[in-house]
Amino acid sequence: MSRANNLGELARKLSLIPSTAPSNPIKGDMYYDNASNNLKIYNGNVFINVVSDPASGGIKTTYTLNGVNYKVHTFLQSQSFILSVDKTVDILLVAGGGGGGTYSNNGVGGGGAGGMVVGNNISIIKGLYTITIGGGGTGWSSQNTNGGGGGYYAGTSGHTDYSTGGSAGGGGNNTTHNGTSNQTDQTLNGQTLTGHGNGSAAPPSGGYGAGGGGAGGAGGNAATTPNLGGVGLANNFRTGTNVTYAAGGASAGATFRNGPANTGDGGTGGYSAAGQGGSGICVIRYQV
Image (cartoon, rainbow, N blue to C red; front, side, top):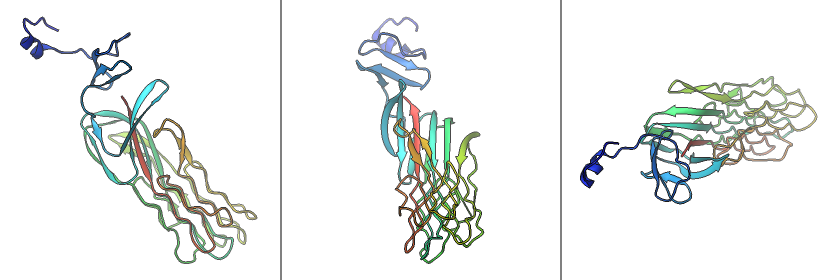
């Protein structure tokens, strides 16, 4: 910093060299953070940004995990994410889960989970991003033993086509259904977000229907007992504590369940009604 002869010249010439947080700060100390490109001031407890929040959209929360401070934007419904500076973020995207099948016997499959996509340390440039949250599938309104597949990429809704999905729906016991997942890795600005989804093998004839596939595993397909859906996957981006998303729906005969909102879970199969799939979610977090 060059020497200034008066306060007016000081105001024009003052500049801060990007650095890390100073040790042993006192209230009022300032520095320009090299990692986040933010001017920070010490409030007596922690350093906080001097300028207004560089991002908007969704439900904004903060937490500290392993000594690192995070800001989180959670999208439970479709909305815009507006970024005024370039950021490195972690991203969780889950599509809507599929609804279950319905029929008047045990051979009814569960709905597949919505596809799940996760990215760590993804660089995104400033601008406006449209976040689309997919709804859960309603399942079969008429009698059909097959569970619906989950939405196969983030922002899509669960559906009744059991053969494919983010995770496939479980087949009925009189089908040769071998559902497959078509959830693939996604790219954003040339960077990879890992996709998660699983299929559901054909159930034995005359037995129970198969469970819907989940992000963490295939649905069950035993003959003599109700089948659970494939397990979901845990993620801690939203709160710092693991939450499980994108579990498959169980077959008929298991505990009836609609997929909870904003989980991407599949709905269960049922004798007179199908369990609905859970809607999707998007979580974006970054260090502050």
